Image (cartoon, rainbow, N blue to C red):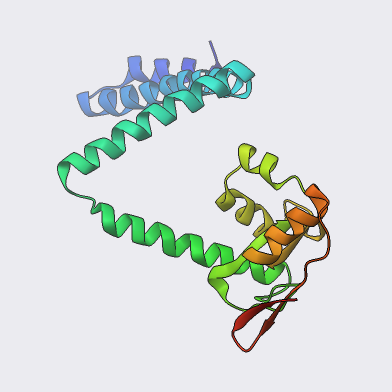
Length: 187
């Protein structure tokens, strides 16, 4: 038994009034609870850091969040249309930041400046494989937080991105696209 616990027990036994006993008793309970909580917390931390613990924690949180969202929808607290609008606006702002980091709001090939047409292109290919691993939103987040090499990406419009795919992946050459006066011209 630790010295702190011995002293608290001695104080509890020598306390003269009920109030002192209650106060000392509460202190003793608090000390015991903190010791117990610390050991449980340590075991939980070690378990969550293991592969099995991480997997089970993710599964539990996924199931919990699905049930939580379902309860919110059923209760009428959350307006789905408003939530969708907020999500889209957040994604648009995140995408704008990522595009700005990668070189601005113009297509590298043709100079298209229509934001809704701009896409993040994988310079060396492999975008389809990466989309299976992470969502476009996660890619934008990684670019903004500098978790990925930004030189591996550039900004292309949808047409030039498709052209990049046709030329580099399929090997068909001979097409060129330019942006003049708000419209696309094929040459």
